[in-house]
Length: 210
Image 1 (cartoon, rainbow, N blue to C red):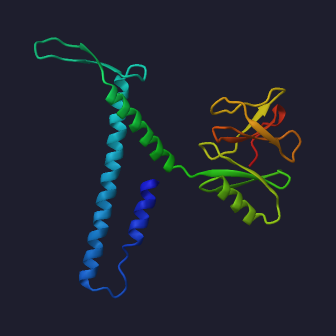
Image 2 (image 1 turned 135 degrees about the vertical axis):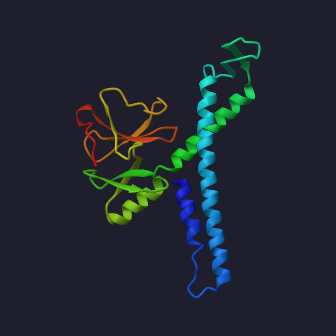
Image 3 (image 1 turned 90 degrees about the horizontal axis):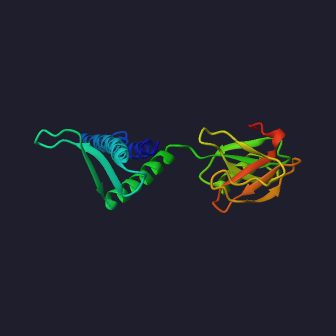
């Protein structure tokens, strides 16, 4: 999706204008071909990066600085064990994982659920951040009080966490959270110091609201 947006933006700026002469048309077509070639190269690079990360990670011992595998020597020995400490390679693999995670995250639309009014229904929208999601909801439901926006799950669904007598902990980092009450009886909005926010409801009301 990240490359798709860049691709679309680049091609949108390389449209052949009406009445363009042959020279201008050739130049635009040449640039379009270059964009297509660079897109293909970027996709190949990401694919190779994924493969490299998977192969090297398979040799890594307990996510540490050590790597272990087998090799052959030219004197007829087979399956020779190879163990080495390679801190720099470990750092590079960790950084590669960060980049690949960011690429994967960029391909996923940021979906939010905004609770407003009496919270009988959550407003679903795509937005870059919590503030924008609340603004979109306010535009769609003028006059309705906006309470909070919480991020959707990876599959784009609203997940609410049940609680009993104990206060709910953050499902991401496990920290105790600060919370406020929502208009619906027993419903709480939790905000964690890790910046994750979520809705907690009494155990018997943990159905997903859409």
